[in-house]
Image (tube, rainbow, N blue to C red; front, side):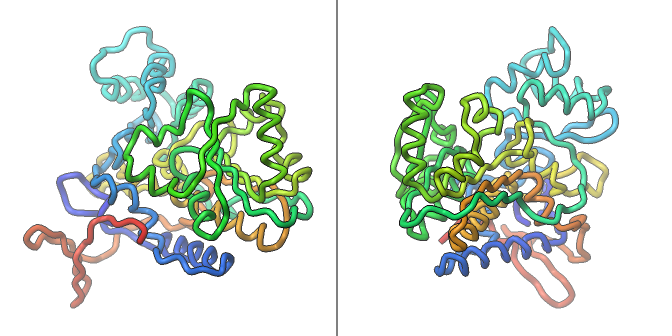
Amino acid sequence: MGLTGPEHGPPALASGRWVERLDGVVNDISELCGQRLRTNAAGFLGERAALVGRGRRGSVSVGGACRMVTAADGVLAVSLARTSDSEAVPAWLEKGDLAGGDVWADVAAGVRDKPVAELLERAEWLGLAVGQAVRPPPPPEPCSVTDAGPAGSGRNQVLDVSSLWAGPLCGSLLGGFGFEVLKVEAPGRPDGARYGSAAFYERLNQGKQDTVIDLGSEEGRHRFMDLCRKSAVVVDGLRPRVWANWGIDRLEVAQSCGLVWVSITGHGDGRAGFGDDAAVSGGLWLSDPDGGLPWFVGDAAADPIAGLVACRAAAEATAAGRAGLVEVAMSQAVSWVRDGDDLSATGAEVFRRGDHWVVRAGQDEQEVLPPRGRV
């Protein structure tokens, strides 16, 4: 709650049923792995904000790299997290010359008269992470699981080929349950999270061993396959076509090596996606009661949601002794957790008391606490 609402106003109150459903995922992980996690869903959702010291910013994401903008027939969440994203904006908007100086002003002006479908299509071509503020119907499952036969026995290694948040969280949790996690990075292209908060990176990657493999080379692919034959789980965060370009069939590897391959993507297809825009695509956003742009709910919430869903699926498969391909689309996982909840506002009152915000519902009062992470 403390991470949703206007930057200089009160925190927004909305239904929290989706957080309760995510608590169920956390409890499932504990039961499957035989060791209770000491943190509930809120601790995972608020972890980065707590470590970095960030707060709510309304229609700007907590991290600042994603913003809500109004197109001709809908609202989009646009992520410009990488330098290359900002450089692609002129091509996305089909404008040779932009005002310059403020890329977000250019984006807001450039999308105003363009239809959402066209903007989403061009974003996919250019590899931009853009999501539409919609409330899709919940899918029957949070992820797709394809069985690949019996798992190999006597293995305790996880290959973490992911980056940023969702995948590393999955690997971190598996490491906490006794798996040995090997973090795999590309030469000259380390995990982008290394350039952010050192404390947050350490939280997600503490205890992992590191190695560098060039999967674009034949030698690198041979080395990777050797590691797969000794591993119980692979966690990756690349789009499927990247693996296809390298000649690696994820399901075939899962079957031949007897492992669980966990693939985490933004949307399950060719579209790029980050935690904030994927959360919005999954319906996790809140309307501004004053008619302004919608507000982000939490900090890149699709990342921790997808990481927890991925961990549960990997734990289920390994506990059952099965190999397989687990495909987690962050927007799908969010929609499943939301389960049709429209996040409608509650009837509680929010008011200021000294330096703190307080919620009053009937005779009960509760101080709004700052975000917190795992213990």
